[in-house]
Image (cartoon, rainbow, N blue to C red; front, side):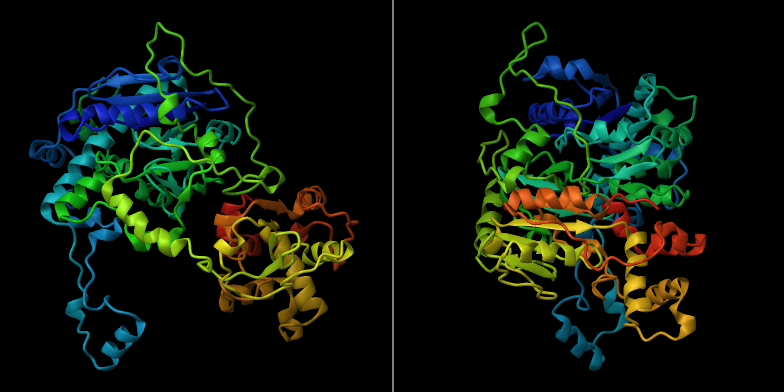
Amino acid sequence: MLVFVTAVKHPDNSKSYEEVWRLLNNTLYSVCSQTDTDFRVVVVCDKKMPLIHNAILINKYTDFIEVDFPSHSDEVVESFNRLGNLSPPIENPKWWRQWSRDRKKTIRNKGGKLFRLARKKLNLDPQNQASYTYMSNPEIKLMVNYALNRGSKQLIGFLAAKKHTPEYVLIFDADDYVGNDIAAYVNSHPGENGWIMTHGYKLSGDLVAPFYNKTSFCGTGNIVSYSLLSEDIPSCLSEKSSQDELFRYVDSKFLITLARHGKVRAYYRKKDRDFLNYPSRSAIHVVGHYESNEFLRRKLRKEADSLQFEEAQKYAVFSPITQEVIDYFNILSIPEIKTDTESQPAPLSVEKKAPIKLLLPPLLRTKKDGKKVNKLVKFSSELTYANLGYQKISSHIAKTVFYPSDTQYNLTVSEEKKFIWFRVGKVGSRTILDLFRQADIELAAEHPFDVHYPINSYQKYFKFAFVRNPWDRLVSCWRDKVIKRDKFNFSDSEQEFESFVDYIAKYVDLAYGNPHIRLQSKLIDLNHIDFLGRFEAFEEDIKEVMRILDIEASIKKKNASKRKADYRDYYTDRIKDKVAELYKQDIQIFNYKF
């Protein structure tokens, strides 16, 4: 079983506790709309408020735990330092470096590359100018109290979850949304240490953008094995424990790590417990409302509360939310939200569908017939003036016809059939190209290498790619490029497979190097893909592509190498582990195993 756990901020620390509860209500409807009903939810709060919609559904799965914890104060911090074992003390800036905006740009970091190079040549960059300035004391005080309050409540949530005998716990923010198949996926993958939600969306009003962070996308989505959590929670504690008891008996670093979602992965990695990346984009971080800690921090810094424009440029384009996303995350529009009580029938009938099988790998699902529904919906969270201003600036740039992709790709483009194929070396490329030739499809671009393609020019085109098990793909590359074609000009002693892997580890840039060896995740625009097939199910998946594109042709495998049937036969334990490290990103994103 999976138990979702959240901590609600203290009423004294909110601008409007009613607004906090409204945001929580929307989140709980999203969480409780799981396709697999083997889950429970624990909400830890200081004061329970009435639910304004879907109370029957939410109360069916949710335990509300009320605690009597103090609000933000110096006394709370003093108690933590006195009873705990953290060194240096929690107010030390060391503990609050994870947020990028905590550091102010110094002279050394300002300007472009040429400017910095010129300063270096002229010796105008003394070392003492490269020091960083961290958060101000009031801001540190805010984040310290936030971490102690949230961490304490999450601990109570874990203790309260124990009665459900969970295998996993998912920590979520009380103002976000989650995908409806998380319980189905987690419950079908027992025995893992856990997952980190590295990919997700940011939502502002009715605009969304895909975002990524390798340590943790946002406060929602750290999924941890309950047995791992139990190792750090003493048996003398219960859901009735006071905050001081938590401070006294729980390791201080563990307590604040719970509240700092970006540190969870590193905390367990030091214990040799690596977490996987969650295989789909299944969390939405709601931005732009006045109850977020980010808004309070910006207010202390006297900064605008809008999103930074450079963030949108870096991560993706904000665009109108689609009906597909609305349905997957169960986001309610204003007309759908109606007040109900536990004694009244629920205003919305929630149809429970069969659990979604995550056959496709990461961050996407197949669009039926390649069509996309762009239905604008008014949401209960209105845009702030600051966000409107930000969007006004960014939309003019991001929506231009020739707005380029962030990364270069190898493409095949058809104007006739309106498709883009992201070509991945050693994954059936010649076979796919042969299908197009059989069907007499004119290709506007057969294989341009490393191009920044204009995203908006091809917005309505069907985009697809194929991926392959990295261990298997590397064997195929070695057989073709080393043994058959001698592309690397190796000596006889260097042509062994183990030597080839060692050569790659030492000399090849897997992000930008040879496309037959390059990371597959660097060859595919995962933010703008409609169908991702697997080499392991090639015939079935290529037939689906042919159906969508209305192509008739016979599948003839080209360039198939003569080799041992099982790629595992080429590997020693050392080389298997080395490839696992080299292609870790692909293995995690595409959910492959040796």
